[in-house]
Image 1 (cartoon, rainbow, N blue to C red):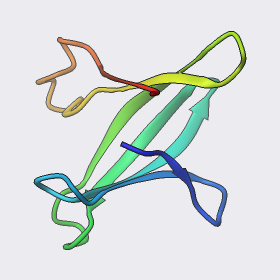
Image 2 (image 1 turned 90 degrees about the vertical axis):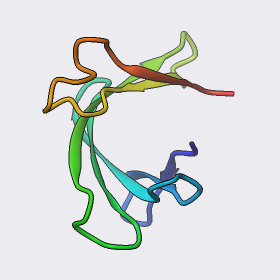
Image 3 (image 1 turned 180 degrees about the vertical axis):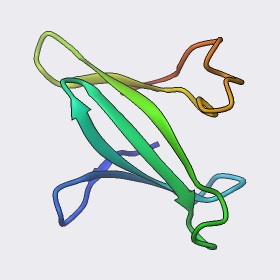
Length: 88
């Protein structure tokens, strides 16, 4: 997953290679906390979700990893915690 910066200076991800191609638009909340607004790439509004996201910074001030709770509103994964993506 590659996080990019849009022309409007916001973070986003296009997951075109996923089983359900989706776009994540990140909105800054506070500090290292964001929300991800997720929607279908091919059919807008078909798959919509808003999920909490944390970015973890290293001692150099750069992002080391980010975590997202999928299905947070349903509580399905909220009990198990975030899925973490580590910068490679």
